[in-house]
Length: 597
Image 1: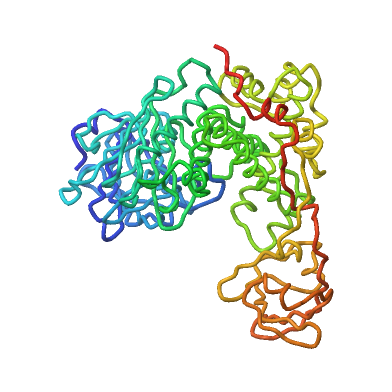
Image 2 (image 1 turned 90 degrees about the vertical axis):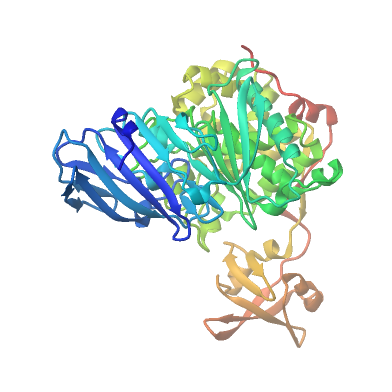
């Protein structure tokens, strides 16, 4: 039965994670004052991850009652139910949720760890979404060694964190995931606000002190960016990191973030500073931490006007993901540089990677980054073999739009993108914004109109003026020889053989007739045939030939494809960045101009 505290909350969820081996959460939902014929629904997506994920597929054994009488339930569609109940008497629903998704988006439960977002476990009581919601998580005796962490405000919890938490409304409940288990935990302060970092699944060699020290520097830099010496707009913050054998990702929330990283990418005890700085995996993890923390301002508060109130029942479209994800992607690594966690060379290496990712995507000439934002629901999260030919990433190209805008503003000498971001925060009162707000702030701070640049860079498919703008800040963009796959117009997987994943539009492989799914077995060159295991063997066996015959397997048939080999040499879609004027580069990459109170 619901606890006595149920009567104090309009909506009360009791979560029982006892069935760890069955991978099932037991949920009891009590609605204190249901409507006659109360409708309920489970979200079909989670904010920050723009795909219909159909969480109701994991819900089972749904039942309802009032007092000791069963209440009939009618399913209205894939995620809505109608309880044929009376008003005025508490309605109790019980159900189970299967938890098999070890990602940041859904729910997971096994003998070692539990994690869930309310969008996966908590039915919405339609018409009462703005009422107070209580989440009660039980701690079965078998899980006495577990602890619980969440960004929700505690109402009555035990020393391990299990018990009751209160949310102002369903939106707040949905924005505060829950982590359970025997996790590692540490705390620090940034901007005068307590922060907590928990890590599940780390190896014994994990150096938690280093991770927390570096996370603190990131947080302090982000707070200084937005608020100078003022306090940030939250009373506490929680990082929840799940370390797995192989994985990467994060999802932002209003006062927390859920992260996944590869276990090998965590810092290890005994590593020198030089070894840490050379660890690309750890740098990537720090960039992820920086990215999701920056989202606390840029998308969770300053957000598209279309996201002023989430609609959990359908797609929420916006053309502004290039700003909210792209600009965040620009600043995530830049803040690492400003925090002293990257040097100039390390930062430029990451920027080079982003530039090459965009240049090596033919879809940049097909789809604008504004269109990519709008189409995220059907394209970005549903990638296939043609994705690079038809789309562009609003993360990577959005980051380059931010770069171009920042460098152009700095070149003109009146302002910089840092000031634009803070002025947007003030103009929109840390709330919903539109593209018109960005244009207004740009004109206000710079003294000129930027509609032409935004139309070209964001709503068009022309190339960005990277070389020109980087050159104005002491950085040259030099063409480099492309790797074999890029030179041929292929993306492949190599594991004892060559599997074609993507054939890029306009490349030599497309002209030869390659298709995604082909296995490239061998080549014939100069009267001889050779078995291929890796793509870099092509130069060895071609031996200077300009034309070869590729032997591929397609649907069990062997095909001979005439392939013209492009000449080696510098390529327009593979570049490197060199510092030519260190003083000019320092003015861009050096210490940030602090926010003013």
